[in-house]
Image (cartoon, rainbow, N blue to C red):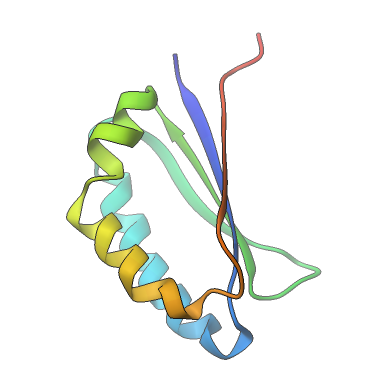
Length: 97
């Protein structure tokens, strides 16, 4: 069963451009991963520097056994840690139908 993951991120305003540069690389590499259906970053219109990754994966294993252990994901988390205003909030969803 497919899984949609939303990761809510708030970046310190002074790091917005640096964060976006890192995110572009993360998006490109994540879209190429086995099990990824889609991977998009959105910025909140009303709150600049607030973002949400909306990701769709074929199953939970694609997230936990491929994406979350990939070198680019681990490096992304390490590089952006000081850029974040607060802890990232991650929610996973299954189709309700």
